[in-house]
Length: 283
Image 1 (tube, one colour):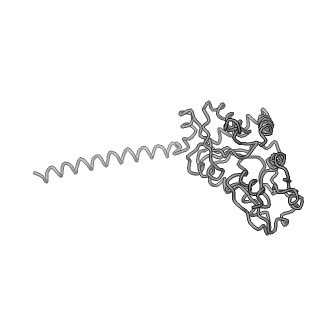
Image 2: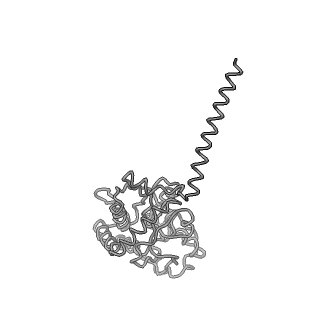
Image 3: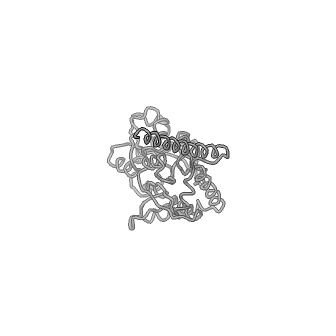
């Protein structure tokens, strides 16, 4: 009797396995034959939820910084992010973290986009989806900020021999400092440019690598600093937006928005507004 019951149960289980296997196999086969996408659902999820999560490191005025009075995130990249939200009809949710953590958040897919004055690099293009360039209205040269007497001596890469140069960890500036300063004593990774400036003032580093227009802002607000004549070589000008690898629909939507903003000359407007606001706060 027991043997008969077990045989019946076994038969039922086998039928269930075969039925479930058929559903799984048929479903997968149809998707492959019809060419249906197996991933890249981030854009639709954002539209459905009404929220776009953006990683940002607000320590790089005038692009992104914290208002000294309100603590609100401001800057030209923030205006750009809000414009993306308007075009998609969603709310922007800012995820504040240091620059290196922003990169990690994109790579792990814990955010939808990274908008934080990010430069293009071939290595980044391998690990995330990158947008077309924006902010290319300015000459995006890169240089170093140093104490005035030191800055005047820094004209070529060889002039950095034995010096300590700070650069934001995870940034293209860090890689360029390592690769383009022959004989540099040490490239010191810092979590933010503000930390680098503090180390510069305390004499812990000799220079801080950064974008030229950002260096101009710092130089105008801190006495005794100067901008070196030296310039880093940039593979591409402008900044890019990052999305998790495979989120092609998301980055295509961003590219359309970039093209629209560029056609309306919004990037230069946002930048000028951000510079004026940052200068009022001494940033």
